[in-house]
Structure formats: structure tokens, C-alpha cells
Image 1 (cartoon, rainbow, N blue to C red):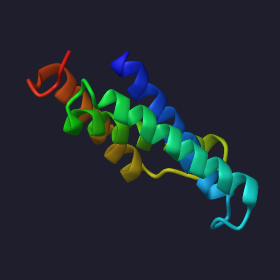
Image 2 (cartoon, rainbow, N blue to C red):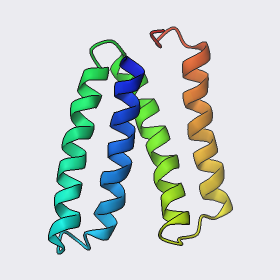
Image 3 (cartoon, one colour):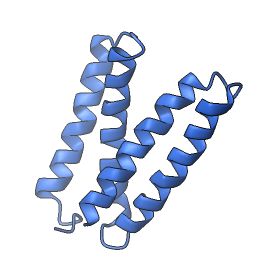
Length: 109
């Protein structure tokens, strides 16, 4: 369940971040409301995952996957471009999360 909670936290963080762009600086009420609700749900599920996952490890996964998924949404939904340096940077972030997951004693399995 701990990874399900973390996955839900990531999904709602990505939804909130995506609607943050759509909210146009919180000037549009419906997208702004979706941002607030999504982040509330995100932090709720993140807090549940933290009952059994170490904070640093959970945050690395949450942040790393959130970055990649949000970047993919920016490319496919908002038609924004990623340059080579951005792709390399995100690859390094995901690589770091994988190293933590498979080799660190910090991770709780």
C-alpha cells in the first residue's frame, strides 16, 4: 500500500502542476480550484506513504517521477520543447532514484 499511496501522491502532484499552468496565475477559478484540491490530495497520500517509507527516499521518488511526468505533459499536452540538457538532467535524476532504490540501505522494502 505504501507505494500505491506514493504513486497516487505523484499523480495528483502532476495533475496539480499541470493545472497550475492552465490556471494562468490563479486568474481562472476552475483550474485554480483543481490545483488546490489536487495538491491537497497529493499531500494527503504522500503523508500516508511516509508512515512506512523514509522521507528522503519517498521525496526522491516523488520529486524525480513528478519532474519527468510533468515534463512529458508539457511536451505532449502544452507542446513545449525539451532540449538535450533538460533530457540529460532528468535522466540523471531518474538514475539517482534508481540507484537509491536498488543499492541504498535507506530504502525500506
